[in-house]
Amino acid sequence: MATHENINGLILRTKDMGDHDRYLTVLTAERGRITILAKGGRSLKGPQTAVSQLYTYANFEYYRRGDFNILKGGSPIESFYRLAQDMDRLNLAAYLCEVAAEFTDEGEEAEDVLRLMLNSLHAVSRGLYPLEQIKGAFEWRIAAISGYEPDFSGCAVCRETYADPFYLDVMNGAIICPKCLSEAGRTAKIGAYADELREAEIRAVLPAAVVAAMRYCLTAPLNRLFAFELADANDLSVFAKQTELYLLSHVGHGFESLRFYHKMRETER
Ligand SMILES: [Zn+2]
Image (cartoon, rainbow, N blue to C red):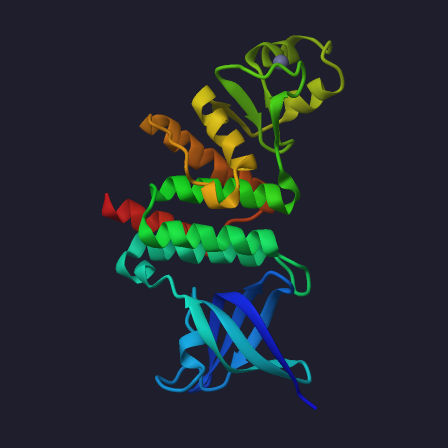
């Protein structure tokens, strides 16, 4: 007997099969990523169509048959339709979805990632902040949610809380003040961490304003995540570059949608 189910989720990915069918990869709070088959999801009419479109957040009604979840219908909650009005916004949304799929699993709750995605798509679709700012805050926060939270409370060696700049030790998720960094080059006084520090290949210079923004993004409520300002264009550019580098370094690979996003941005210049 088929069991009927009902769940809210965001469509991260669609894959068309044959002339009519479409597989939906849906991110849910309770069950993480699930796959739902929309029979007739590609046709222009029918109860499934409105809840078979990419980036749609909806309530899905489906039943289970064997290993498959088969879509019956549902109702859209938010379609983020403004994404379609701007190529950069659309490309960024594709990247956010690819990252969210990477960091979630079937059967594992994903409430924070889902909330982060909904807030991010809302901001991207309406262009509420510079895209680089939304993208960076998203990358930084999803890394933190997914087990790569950097320790920004102070210098990893002397615990000093203020320096301008700090140095980011990407792989250890730590910041180091200039004094400790220069000592690490000369002496073993700072302990075992000195060896790691000398070998840390990926190190970035973070101006104080960027450190402040990154600290904000680690702790801000998700609905206020993007509400900060990096007034200096250079600071925003450092923020954007380092949040991306940090995420990619910990994931260990790039993303096709990210390459495409950058390529199109460059073409526009
Ligand atoms: Zn220090």
